[in-house]
Image (tube, rainbow, N blue to C red; front, side, top):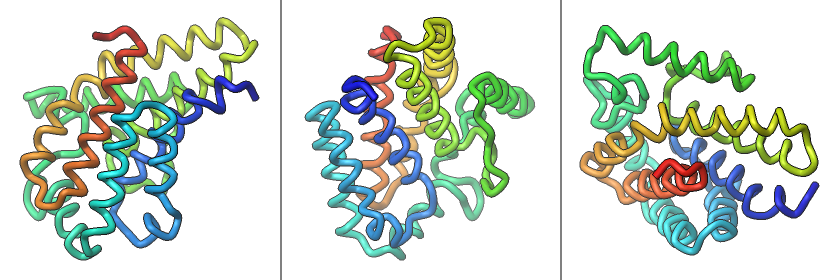
Length: 211
């Protein structure tokens, strides 16, 4: 595997995957699997500002007891009534509730084009922030695999889908979602998480020339 894949491009894969993990229910697995050490290493390979944001995220997790994080996670993303920050793309992509199913189907179509299957164990809607970040990870991975002397048609197709997903989907709604998390979160952890997510996605958009 080339240095390109194992360097910054590989770090982008890793950071995207780690960010997705953080949008699942917080648990001791985060610490036991040294998630934040790995995230800091990946972010540091990409950009100093990302690394600083990743460092703050890890510190915020350690500083807070798990029960408080679970309560905040529930308030933000689950309920009991309406979550403070809906974690579903369809909520942010349209103001018309009757059109939200169509928005969800649109992302499923992108998943199909990218060869991405939502696991049967995944108990959320397919346009959940964690699923969309995992799909973005797959797109970055596919481009990295096609890059070193690979099929130019495969690279072109992967690049086009990557750009379309950011331009029409995840890159569109992340700002509104981030704003809701920042205003609703009671713990520093979730404010830092969405800040890091937004910074990373802005860099991905820059790489695609979407600014």
